[in-house]
Every structure is written in C-alpha cells, then in structure tokens.
Image (cartoon, rainbow, N blue to C red; front, side, top):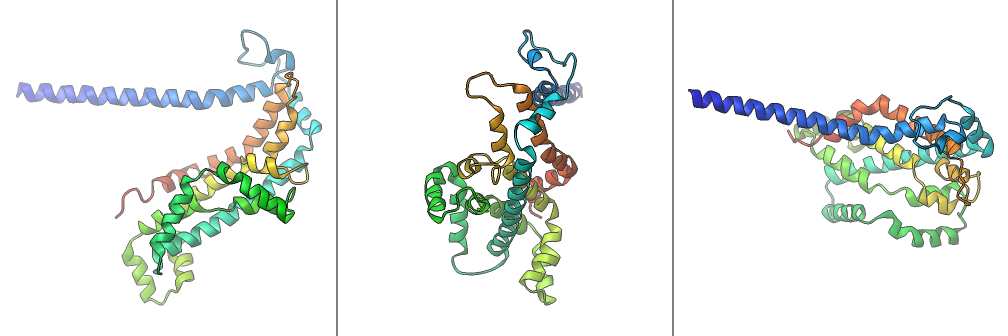
Amino acid sequence: MSGLAHGAEAASHRSRGMTVAGYVAMVLVLLVVAVPLFWIVITSLKERQDIYVRPAQWFPQPGTTANYHDVTTRIPFLDYFRNSLVITLVLSASKIVLGVISAYALSLLRFPGRGLVFLVVIAALMVPNQITVISNYALVAQLGWRNTFQGIIVPLAGVAFGTFLMRNQFLSLPGEIIEAARLDGAGPLKLLWRVVLPMSWPTLVAFSLITVVNEWNEYLWPFLMSDDERTAPLPVGLTLLQNNDGVTNWGPVMAGTVLAMLPVLVLFLVLQRQMIKGLTAGAVKS
C-alpha cells in the first residue's frame, strides 16, 4: 500500500511540474509576442529625441500623438487605406468562394481524376509564392495590368490553402446527415448552402480570418505591381515614411504600423473564439 501511495504522490508531483512548466512556457511565448507590439505602440507615442535615448525608455515622457498626425499628412494615408480595403475585400471574397466550392467538389462530389486534382492542390501548397513572381510579373506586364487593381488581385487569387482546409472539414462531417439530405432531394448547391456550410461555420470563420489577415498584410506583389497611391496598399505606402539616408524618424513609422494593425486586431478579437474552434475542427473524426 505504501508503494502505491508513493507512486501516486510521485505522479501527482510530476503532473504539477508539467502544469507549472506549461504555464511558464505560455508566459514566455506571450512575452515574445506582446513585447514587440508594446514597443511599437510606445514608440509611436514618443517624441523623436526620446526614441534614440540610452537606456531605452519603456514609457514616453511625455507622450505625444504628433506621430499619428504626421503619418496622415506626410503620405496620402487614406488613399493607401482605401486601396488595402479594396484589395483585401475582393481577394478575400474570391479566395473564400473558390476555396469552399473547390473543397466541396473534392470532398463530396464524385468525378474522374478527383484524387489527381487534390494532389495538384497539395503540390501548389509546397511552392512558395516568390518562385512564381517573375513569370507572373512578365504576364501581367504583357497584359498591361501594371498599377491596376486587377494586376494585383488576379495573380493572388489562388485557393490551395483554403481548399485543403475546407476539404478536411467537409470530410469530417457525419456522412449520415449528408446522405439524408440527398435522399430528401437536396441538390449540390442546396446541400452546400443549407447543410454543409452551417455545420462548418467555425472552420469557415477561421479560413476567412486567416485569408483577410494575409491579404491585408500582403506586401511583395503589390509593391512590384503598384507605382503610386492610386493602387498601392497600406503596407507599401508605409515604406515611404522611411528615409534612404539612414535617419528615418521611427515615430511616424510606428504610428502607421499601429494604424495598419488595428483593423485586423479588432477583427481577430471579435472572431478569435470561432477561429480556435475552426482550427481544431476535424482533428477528430466522429
């Protein structure tokens, strides 16, 4: 009996130790993520001479909002913000619609070559976007689409990630419900809209949120495609705040970064619970 009690006590100690280690790791990860964000916000509230003092000041003394006024006057901030909004909304809508439809076809419809098509989708996930930049640039330039919204949006409208994510979700749905809907006369579109999507709402929200954040932060391709504030998105516009002579005033740069982060941060805070559910959905198939 004493041996059993000793073993149970040792197991309890190990369990508490693992719990403590988990909390320590969580705090460390939180610090790694939160400290840079905190530093960006604090720097955006500092006067220029306070940014370069040593040792660094963790709190502005005194704080100022002049950097936020500066970022909206030195560059056409509202134009860049509008462009980001247009590009993000159109690209996100395109990727979500195409991703859902293609995933539905690859998971719940039967047609020859379905497995081969899915292998092509998986292969597309393995290819970095940077590899196709040169060929895409040459094609877009030949079409006369440089410095246009279609030149930025069309080459980025691929849906490999969304197809993969939503296909896995659709395959995890109870087959009995799908078959019952078909027996009741539900066609492909009605089945998708009335049965499949309502049961996949958390995953769809997660896919949508990831897509919106990625498109909002897209930099390389819009930078290559846009020439001015008519089409350039906000990440490209913020680079104009940096000077090439090495004396960049980082206050306005950080203020612009904070303003660029706010929309996606608010969106994440609103949808974070649905996103977590969506990313874990389908991990266990019933």
